[in-house]
Image (cartoon, rainbow, N blue to C red):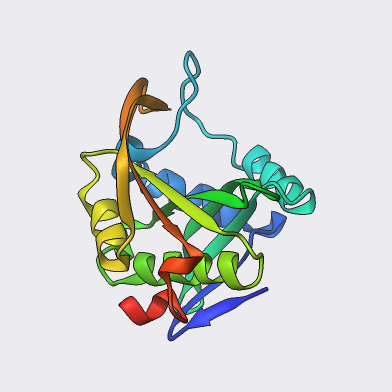
Length: 185
């Protein structure tokens, strides 16, 4: 299920990605720390092997999807589709990260647009949500570029960087897009 636009490609995460992901996450540790989910009482390091295995299992049981972002053939980030619900909810939540060395090149908005298009057109979901810390200006710019609507604020919603953090909630439904979300960029 590779998805491509210009020099940006998305594909499912594979076990052979573990070392590259570990290297990127360690290199960009300080860049990602303020936005990275944490578990109360547990400190870094992140277990990338466990994370990749979990994402592969979620894809098998249709509860989630781990996607690798490639730019010019190199792994530069990741999108996680979590909490896939079918039936009357027909929704999911997206989270993502991008390497500092390529941030600001419109890669993340394109990757998120490709993902949402896939979720609506291929996976037949109805609603996608993105939850963002109010201080995360680069991520707020992504949803602004894509025209997602803001739905409110969840107080102390996700444990990030050692504490429970507020998140602004953004969403889009399939009816709000005519054609491809890429057309908004």
